[in-house]
Length: 527
Image: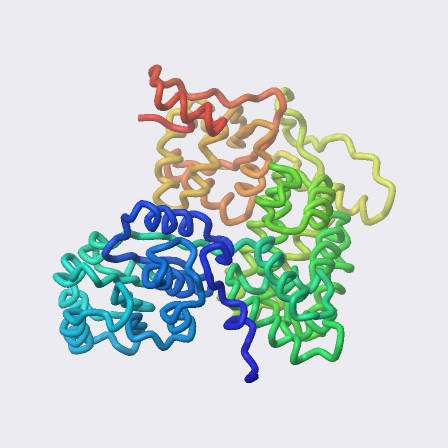
């Protein structure tokens, strides 16, 4: 027998074999059972998730000699012809290459003729969004009132490009990306049936690299069988796909947690020396931090993390070493590597810089005096006890920066004057940098002495303070203060466990109260 690739050999033959599309399958089964099959269906979703396969199964269900039925017999001439793509009553059209008005006019003429042997004449148009507007308009009348023996099934990856007049005449079913766990389960069935010697870690790696497309996963497995000699190992899989192993992500994150900057750079160099793509590594690391975030919030929920249980357990254990604020801050840092790469057109250096930033030891840097104490003028705070010479240098530099020095030759402003323009400052910043305005609105100015303004945040908003302390954000706020107060003002941000941001008070509104309760939210601003 001629060789058949896995993606075709293991294509689902009935509704029960379709993987990961329970909602669409249930809808179609109910339509068949209740004899409420629509004139036209639109199957919308990513590539490789079963849209065309489901269309063929629906065609079998309609034209089977036992049909319409939810369980096509697979034995009658109609079922066999549809499975082999040679049925005269099931016409498959590629919307990308038959997209013009003349092609649709030909279709309109042919729909008038009765099916040759089956009960229905079924048109399956793939990538239907590629049709021209003129072709869509030519199809409208036929689509709205087709002959009783004609059914249309459209498939598309871009439903947003289809005219609303077409959408309104179709029953739409949305196909979703298939979860990694479901892909692993299907690949495991194929491997056992084909007698493949393969590690389970390989199946996980294939599932992750397929990005929710089962067809891609089956094609990768097919390629690995040809690539490997005997047992399919994780090393061979990683080498062929050029991806980063899960263990490498755990290891580099562990070094970030331990603040091992050198180790992080060495791991990155090793990954890149193996020929891994820096962009792929960054994407995988961002995804790993996403999983850490989910684990921090929801624990080892395999459905939310979409990984096997043993990997979920490791992720939860690693997440215990990080706060949620540290994980979210890491997202910003890794995203900034992508932005920096756009400016320098080279990802390695931005990646190194931002990984070192994540792994940099900040433990010797302490907050200024508590909020309850007034700022000390021209007198440095008591030195901290430090053990090493490097710590002493860091502590000395920190206290030099923390020393409060009056701004000379400037008119002094008061806290009352600052509070009077505070709302205006936040509003002006919204027009320039929304994130800065949103963070700043959560703080309150509490002291202003010798033109040094102190703004306090609740202790749980460390991410706000860290973002506003960035040099460009800091300078932007001080510039706005200077423009509104006509004098230079230096701003300092601090955290305090004694400070709690007052909630905005709204009139009693059941809808708003319900939303606040459901999301555990609070009112930031009201008008």
